[in-house]
Length: 429
Image (cartoon, rainbow, N blue to C red):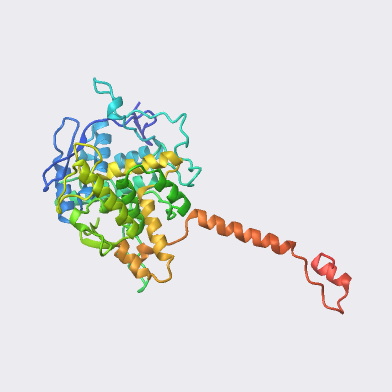
């Protein structure tokens, strides 16, 4: 089934094995470690993780890189190829497989059999309200399809190329990177003809890197946001949404707040930024602090741990645990399910930035500061109108044209020959 020929392996029936894992640790020096199919720590990946940590990469970044490396390690293990003996054809086959094959779907632990059922079976798609990969009927956003998205494949290619570049520099890997740069981009210096004042272009790209379509910024219309807000059941969830949509913090950034960071009198909430890990106080709406006070009163009555150095956001049930990103996303998805929408937590950040930029009294540099962007060009990606607003503008344009055509034309001035005007304008007055 997996024969080799002049075109590469036959991957038509290949299924990625569920071997190895990326395991979180309690060790701050090594927050994640990759285990192979035998449960042994993969030392080359551990060295790469140490390099990422030295570059001030956050644990979330290490985890993101680790998931791509785990996928590559499983692919190599299925064909018995050592990581340091991987060739260009192995990389090419891996990218081909990610481009065509369906993603393996994890089975929830409640539905796994006691004898350890395979966790990479295909999830049935029949009977869903929205077919995977099709636009949502309410939001117009495409739901995740059965295949790997172009952004996922591009990220994976970049991670693996960086991994082998690191070991090439260390002299511990193969003599040739299996994931090379594009042939036309290898020679010369990147941005050698850059014009001052113009943004730098990404001229160093991988040979197997896919073209990623440009994402259209999304915002939640006010009426749908009100419906989402009304679908929430707890004051904690209402407070979270009110902060996300008013201060523009990333979803995971808001969850870093401590109880001492909420300053209702100054309408400020302190968060730790995702990239720089810097502490920043963000101005928030008064309504957000009202919902926060209601949540804190309920938490105090229920016995949630209290202390200025403790997390601000907790689970709603005993045993009390700090609220994680996955739990917050599950809360938001439950509200989505009620409406049949597929908005994401990041859409709240787009909504906040769009509302700020729509105020003529707020400068664009103010929006940049609130969003925590290093470059103003990044902030500008959040500012274009959403799809729904553009559609309404174009509809209004066609309506104005139709009304203009229906409007009776003014009679021509005296002295013009009616027959000449009819031949010229193809109409009579």
